[in-house]
Length: 284
Image 1 (cartoon, one colour):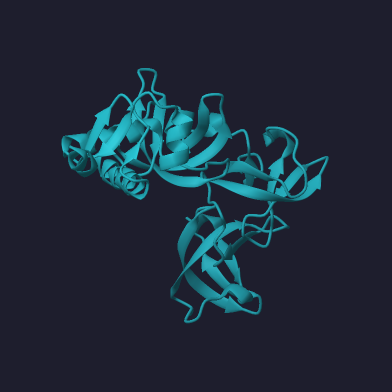
Image 2: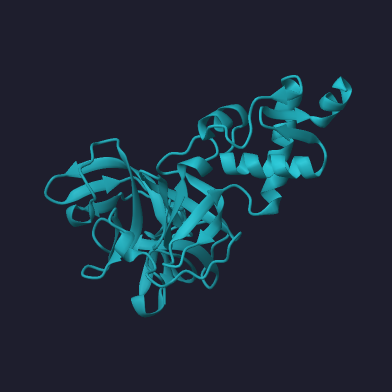
């Protein structure tokens, strides 16, 4: 049976003036309008389409790709507002996606962007958006492991950092001190699981996982050190903001990087800062 809100590989059963009719299984025949028919599509063949409902609530197929499918999150722009119904969001298809009043998480204006999840309204069997998606995330304890690479969506700011959604399924947090470079609501970024707390909550980090991340960070420290004469007044007790401004990394990443460089005998660490070992040796 064709899945509403998902990409489907469906068989063409007949051709008519409006377009091709596809076999939707228990959902019956689904129209693929003529303007979306891909080259080479024939009766008996298969086409990959996204299935949703048109403005008259009829099932329809399209070869266009929405910005998010059922169960996925996206950062969508408000294209229209109906005070009695909700707001309409641009999501890459001809028909805008409705964000009903009951699913809004606060007032929005025309042109604003909002993080939403595409969900199925079981009462109407229509796809809608929800900005109140926390209750729709997986409530079971997550089965990730520390260092696992994940896809992150920045959902909202927090006094501690940013709240993110992991793989469209679980909530997590990245602390201000672990943020590398600019980060804003709506960003989709690669990251990894830094820690799994006893209560199941996830601490996250950006970039590559584990030791694969230390190498590039170490190279960055060496690059900055070399460009600035081989010595800099930054160390374990430097402010996180200073580290981020100079090296473009979190303080934790900086400490890991200089630790690795010290073990490789490439730098010297003292209470006043760090120095290239060649520079230190040359002064002796």
